[in-house]
Amino acid sequence: MENLGRAFTLLLAGFVIVFVVLVLLIIIITLYGKIIQAAQRNADKKKQLPKPSVDPSVTKKAVTDPAPEQDSEEIPGEIIAVIAAAVDAVYGSKPHHIKKVKRSGRMRSAWGNAGLAENTRPF
Amino acid sequence: MDIFYQLGDIIVKLFNASGLTSLSWENYVMIAISFILMFLAIKKQYEPLLLLPIAFGMMLVNIFPGIMGNPATQLMTFQQVQAAGLDPASYTTTSQLLTMEQVVQQNLNLADLRPVLMNDGSQFYEAVYYNVTQNGGLFYYLYQGVHLGIFPPLIFLGIGAMTDFGPLIANPKSFILGAAAQIGIFITFIGATILGFLPKEAGSIAIIGGADGPTAIFVTSQLSPELLGPIAVAAYSYMALVPIIQPPIMKLLTTKKERSIVMEQLRPVSKLEKILFPIVVVVLVAILLPDAAPLVGMLMLGNLFKESGVVERIAKTAQNELMNIVTIFLGTTVGATASGTLFLTPKTLGIIALGLAAFCLGTACGVLFGKIMCWATHGKVNPLIGSAGVSAVPMAARISQKVGQEENPANFLLMHAMGPNVAGVIGSAVAAGVLISVLK
Image 1 (cartoon, rainbow over the protein chains, first blue to last red):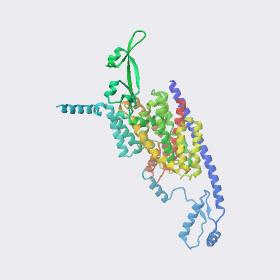
Image 2 (cartoon, chains in turn brown, orange; image 1 turned 90 degrees about the vertical axis):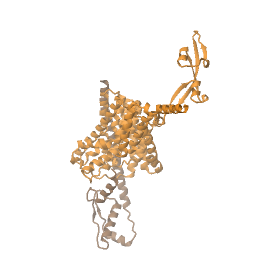
Image 3 (tube, rainbow over the protein chains, first blue to last red; image 1 turned 120 degrees about the vertical axis):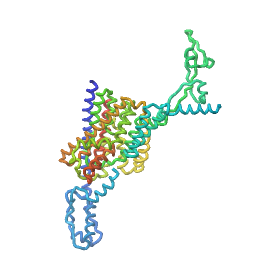
Image 4 (spheres, rainbow over the protein chains, first blue to last red; image 1 turned 60 degrees about the vertical axis):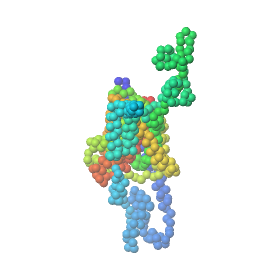
């Protein structure tokens, strides 16, 4: 009976301690995750400020074409550049400019699904 | 004719020395079980990295129990040493005073003994014995890594070096599922206590519910080393049999709609976050629960090797060579603890049954908490990832992926399930620290 009482105490104590430790970890990881993300966002913005000019024609186009509008979820500059290059490759000499880059949804693309399927096939 | 008698003698001696005469029915039962486990490992590929060495060690020890034999020191007389073809000069000696009755019992030659007359007039004879040491079996020495709790932290080092904590950092709420799956440990502790196990024994049995072999071995070596064999075999067998045990529980506790939930993609995690994670975890856990420090410390050290990117050679060694070597030694010697005569006892069978209950309860608690999170997030969390909270990495996460994909082939839960899965490793190490600090 004494052992049983002790067992129930351990059940309660163990349950509480494990949860408390892991909840503390949740709080700490969430906090430092947010701090690091904010710091990196600032660093990225600073990096984007100076715009290197290489080719006069490109510079001209960059001046005439306003920078595409990004959605609120901060698509990295490299991704915007890749998308712009892809659009340019499709339209070629036809007049065009990108107004906005927006994530279409949270679902994966067909390529993403194919990649995941490839990597998870053994399971 | 003599040659035939000698031949006959040799055949009789060989027969007597063979397993055909020395093995009991329990050994044969365990050999049959080892064959089944080998079949599951090779044909069905149920965690062959674990199950194959375990099954082979189990088979070997039941055919030749001496492979796990303890080293022993035997006292031998000069004549016995010579008869055994040994060099007496190689051994230390011990002298003993014997009565006349003992001399006769041991069939010693009086001429070899020195008579000693005691003050009270009684007559004794001083016999000189040689301390002939016999080495233990091969697995006895390899098993010391398990017995002394050395292999589990080394395995954790390798696991840490192989684990990507990114999914957990991206979604820290996964820690809740990792904690929920540990409830099975504490519920089983009560069950084992009710069945009459001592608190330390109950703690060692309950930790099987964490589905973490190294943690189970570590806790048992600290609390009740005499139960190490059955507990290690149970823990590793259940880890290997995750694909059989978990899916029915997961399907029973979830609806088709819940299993079909597609979760949002996780945010990318920066390198700095990944480097800071092991340091933060080890500082917090080791300060709050020092008993969990060897396991969590090594886990996080391995992870820091990987994420820092500056010690690539060490990280690769921890992931591959070290991990593989320790797995071979641990698997075979854990299997070798399942000697039929010691293993097939009511107590051991009770431990195996309670371990299974602990494992099932852990899975069920994880899934149930997954359902709570599903409800709390208005259907954004697939409850199947909760079962990965038992820490069998990465098997439990793979099962979440597999069961989810049975309902919706376009659903990829693997990375989402890895969060609770690695949280389960940390959670079971924390639960181990609680059990050791309270029960030791």
